Amino acid sequence: MSKKKNTRSRHARMIGRSLVWLVVLALVLPLIPYALAYKDTVPGAVPNPGTTLWEDVRQRNAPVSGQTQVGGVDAGILINPYGETWRVFRMQYLVPGGAILAGVVLALISLVFLVRGSMRIPGGESGEKLLRFTAYERIVHWFVVALFWLLGLTGLILLYGRFVLIPLLGPEGFSVTASASKEAHNLFGPLFLVAILMLLAVFIKDNLYARGDLKWLLKGGGMFGGHASAGRFNAGEKIWFWLAVLGGIVLSVTGLILEFAILGQPRVVMGGSHALHGIAALVLIVVSFGHTYLATIGMEGSLNSMTNGYVDANWAKAHHDRWYQEMTAGEGSDSPAEERGAGDAPADGLARPVPDN
Amino acid sequence: MFPVPHQPRLKEGEQIMARMKFLCDTERCIECNACVTACKNENEVPWGVNRRRVVTINDGQPGERSLSVACMHCSDAPCAAVCPVDCFYTTDDGVVLHDKDICIGCGYCFYACPFGAPQFPSGAAFGSRGKMDKCTFCAGGPEEDNSAEERHKYGSNRLAEGKLPLCAEMCATKALLAGDGDVVSDIYRDRVTWRGASGLGSGWGIAYPDGDQTRRRGRDLDGKAAGGE
Image (cartoon, rainbow over all chains, first blue to last red; front, side, top):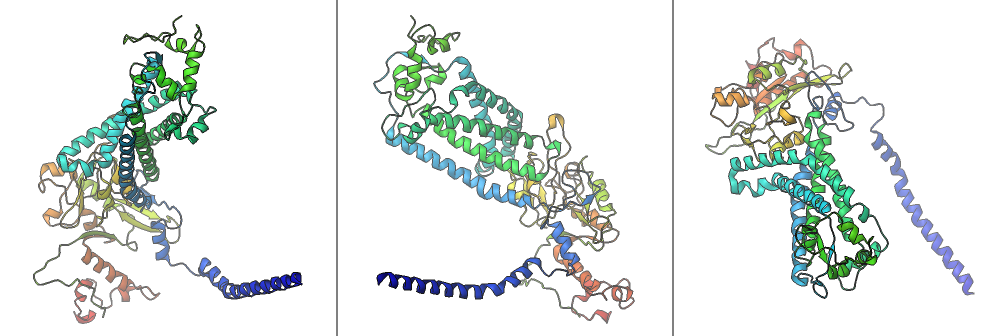
């Protein structure tokens, strides 16, 4: 009985749905010819020559390049529509977006510092030192840092100087500053590619994905309590490394395109390169805030690894336990610590790695 | 005969400054490039830069048209908006100029300008590019009018002498018009009307209905009958 009732109600529902569909189709189907006619805009009609000309000039349908006796980049193009796109991007997105992003990141870092303060080494300093970065690694790092901030500051002057520095220096004063910034940026820019490739060569070995990285990320790097185990570099440092390398390469390639305008690249390419250059630079700058924070006031005992090269054993145990185990495992002549220390005379008078047989 | 073009209503004693504009009539431009040459000569434009150029669309095909293009002296100029050192300014006549003492030659105006007006001068030592150069509407720069310094940096300042840009003044077919935007558009509107949009809109009788080859349509716009002169 109930089965029969179910079938009947199902039929009723089917009929109901069919009716709805019928109504919808009856309304929509007659519109199709109109839509097609609209799409083809009266086939066979004679186009208005004036309309065609101005559509070509405005590049509405396809890029049109005319003939001209005048040499020069894009001389055959009457109106370049991408100029406005680039202007909107730079003035309405890049400039305010970068400022907001930097402000938010700085505020978050300040908040973390206010809440957490400087992270102490658990158990205090043991006095036992481990060599974390060789002299060569430190030189490469500071080479990258020096160029990064030189190029970053000169770039920021060009991006924000009009709003921040003209009121302070006046138009003439800022012109000199901006001119010097541009020259320094162009002069030292190509070196950044060299620095980034050196960084890649020196640190790539320890920044490949290793087991445990995903776990470290899921634990949030131990920021919310609990211990997150890590090797020589944790997953966060690895992400920063790859971000710096890839971002650095994007910056270098787009920068070279922008710098050598004499090669005659079209304006579309230059505008696009500038957009990518700006995005990559601002992303690296804000992430570098986080890196700088954790390496200095955020975490006690970190900075030494990049100044004299040594970290405390307790620091290593807390933040890079698997690396600590590697370093202290052999305790023999072929221990990694020994290997790293070899040929790297600590001129600063600090103790060599303690296991000295 | 034709309605009086719209005139902005002015209050008692109020004056509006002219807004300088270029207009190129595609039905008249014959791609002779005299405007380009005149500009280069009059302003002693740096090597590698052409402040004005003639571009032909659909060259050799039906519908071929030529246009002379330079800085269009925009009301909301993109070059001025993106300049990192804010070196662009608009004169009282609506001419967009830049200060070469402040310009750093970054090229942002070159990326942003739809018309390709600001240009890099040819490469100096080590591929550095120097200050940008652009059409000045023959109005010089921020220096004292017609001083040697102004002439050296920006070229001629014909506006200060009460003359219009040379490119337009010497255009043989009067395709290129320059001057107060209202006047220029009146002239062009009048031309379009007299050329006519229909198939009958050509020929001697249409162009010179009274047999008066020197008739100035501008006078008729006061509302007088066209044949009243």
